[in-house]
Length: 378
Image 1 (spheres, one colour):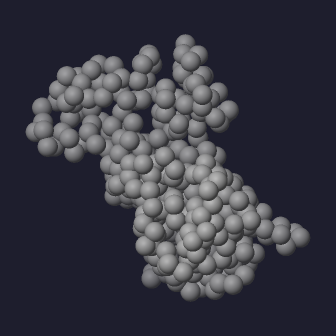
Image 2: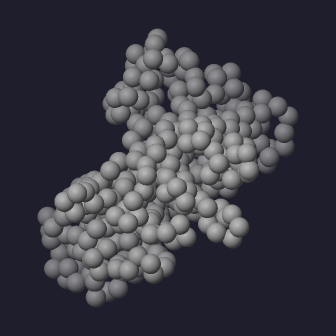
Image 3: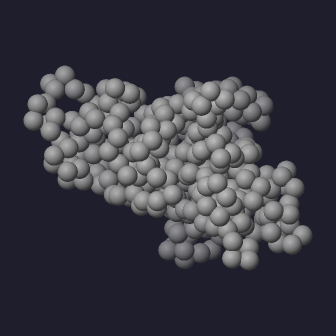
């Protein structure tokens, strides 16, 4: 499900399946969290799966990904990410430095100047192997029962930001003469340390100054000493799924994780599972950014407003307000992230219109995947 905050959502998403002799062989799930515009995320939605499928086919002797070695699958996914980002950046640079019609140049500059994270999960149904590729700070979390039958949250990705010590160490190693490259958890002002697009962090000074001259390009991110500072190279993790154990996967843009911890999200889905049949296909309803999206009977608390309520109260969700009202698990997570049973807060957050809504919530995109007990269901 998707709940926009920007007037044009900067998030995008896509799911796809691959079939062999009529049976589902693999599945791809993608969430693309854009920033500084929607264009890069839209490009990822349009092309990234195709690039991945091409690279997976290239490493297989029969054209089926199941024939490839696990480490080769990782490399294929990495290669697909890097190839697409290079294409985006090269087309943008060519539009700046070469002859082109203005409309063509602007269509190429959009995906290169804006940016996007990418979170892609690749599931092979026969082997029950799940690959999660992460570029940026969207997050994948596995819900799994432990030996005691209790649900645990297992991180399948790490947030790649200026607060991640491993990412900071990598950046300082790559740019040893720039000790102030990362400041207050940001890379020259940007929260994420890996992303698609973001030409201001990747292009040379010469290219960016030409963009300013020809297209009124944005200011350079100074000090621009040794770009590129960002990479689209994903970190790929591998997990053996246990469908018989009830495993489920939560994928979400950081708009959800701004309010929920991984543990809270898994707990919410586990509670939801107690009263819902996951074999039933339930499409998520729209949660429009307006109080009319929620039935009036659910806004009873608005009759008794709390004069001490403030938007800052929802920086992190409070378990005491968690409720069970939605037929779709992703909508269930989103509702509870934004207030749950605290209906005054929920209605308030949904009422704020762009651009002011970005002060209280980000675009939110959530996908909850339940793994079936055979190789044809998920």
